[in-house]
Length: 215
Image (cartoon, rainbow, N blue to C red):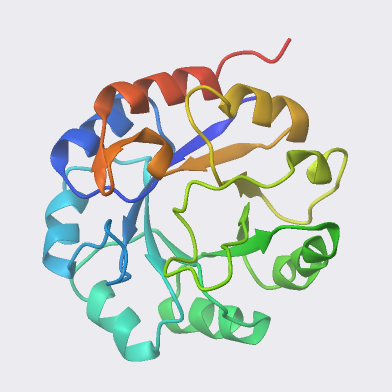
């Protein structure tokens, strides 16, 4: 099983270079002002031109309106939209139609009942990102370094291609893939030396462990 790696929340060239060199399939840029990983359209455009062909540039948005999406897409050549807020399935379909881009919807999980959302979102999104549900009152919808019980996903059939996220690090990603058989993984805080600052060595270790054979 070839596991895809997404490095999210990139803010500077060093982290981006490490992600590319490590074989990441996706690189994520965060357009959510409350996040320590937030980048402006100008910053994102400068990073985007450094991404080789074949690596998808993902823009992460939280409950964006049409104007917010348009303002970024005017400047940044994204390949995939990631919706990480409380967007309904209907809104996911609207964003897909509005932008003409594939959409990945994040679904927060803390208990078995949360997995029921995967079906509804799977009908309208091109991809799913299964993340740990943020704690009540959290400022960030993701990137909190929290994991959920990965055993909830064991043996589960999921309608669309998906990535596992939430609390992943170079030390636990291999076990997470073994338990869930995730076809892809997404990491942000787990490869940082400080909030918003990617550590190139941690990125390399993460990618190596994520793509190591499952015995």
